[in-house]
Length: 343
Image (cartoon, one colour):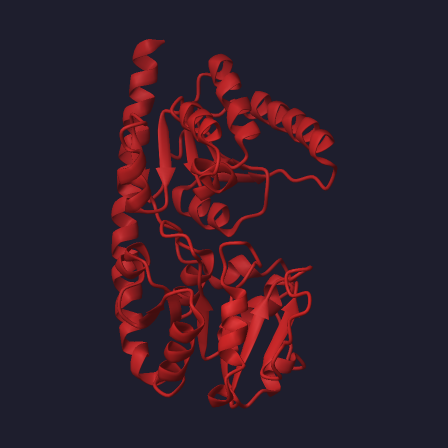
């Protein structure tokens, strides 16, 4: 479902993010992930120069840029005045709710900047309903389900049997976690400390930093730290079920898409948006210890029962995705026609 291949279509991001890789591939946009490990000011200067040089060299017809970064978005808006491309902003939650939405003036500024785009993309219907009055064209495109290739670099495809999860004979849960403030990691750890889960393992991804200072980690919990994409995919495939939990109501987390892609059941956040997107085949939990514990106990004893529901959810999800990609293609076509009329 690709946009006009005769036009130059590019996708810009100032970070590595799986949504950019999978969605740009589906839509036929060439992806440029420009990153820097410098300090904030030096990083912005370096990436702004690289982005400007890239856009001047390519002279694209259509540009998708990710928000965040608001600096990248602002730069693309300025350069659009000279290069006359159609500008699409892919707004993640923090591109609509900066600093968790705590500051009204920041929320206002971000809305006004995003509104300058020809098209705004969001990942779910809740966000569209909340922001549709601010943007002329706003579309919902969920994350495409990642394929196996998105986890591997060239020549790196191999199975590492020595990984300790391959030697674990217990029922294995994978808690996909970035240790952000919206994730109930303390509640998950407390739940797995219950004696009824002594025969159930939980692997928690990411580096906790200082988040667990003074916290006792139960024996059945393993902290993986940062691991390679290859190892992460191996663990995702080898686990029996996933945990993907957040306190945000409008957030569709990458981990839930990754689980659905490989056909894994699990426990997701109990929000209307998660239920409507991922459907049957999953249990839904509040971010509270007792609810998490009860759902883990239920799922651990009945994992096979949920797999048929996961397969049905995956089929329905892909059907909806194709429709949303067609709407995007049509919207870009209309926007290009409109810009040509203005010129």
